[in-house]
Length: 165
Image 1: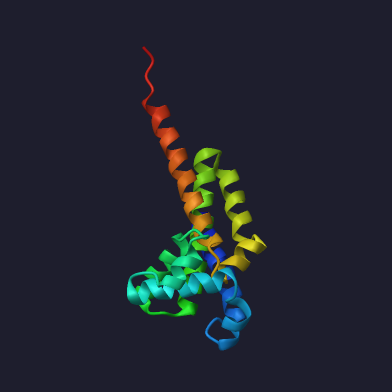
Image 2 (image 1 turned 30 degrees about the vertical axis):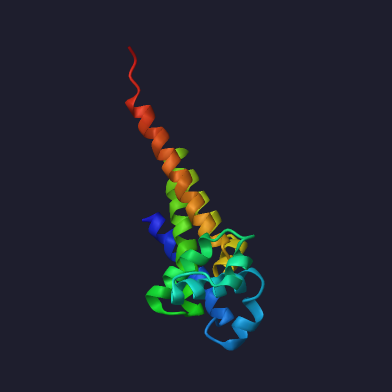
């Protein structure tokens, strides 16, 4: 029950931040889609529309990790090239990270620590801010938390299988 509440509050905070920036307006693209987000968006458009990188995008992405533009291109391929949808998917992933973090810490340390960890991430200002922009940190955080959770589950599974001779 508390995990669901953490997710809902986290999602609400992230959506409120995203909506306050009005990602459907041209001013959002002018003010917030520059530097890395612009590169990610342009490469994602190439991948979503052509299925491959253009020569210019290939040269530009060579110094970056291509995971986030690939993820964004999958979103664009499903719903069309649409910056607000990319932002809302970021918000959802960020809120999901809070839920996974709460479950991870609860599994590894205890119930009370899991609740605290979930709330801390749900209300963390930078986590909320980055979710409202097309930055790769949101996807990275989600994958990192999921990887740690898989690690903790693996350790727990190994401990339960130990036998003493």
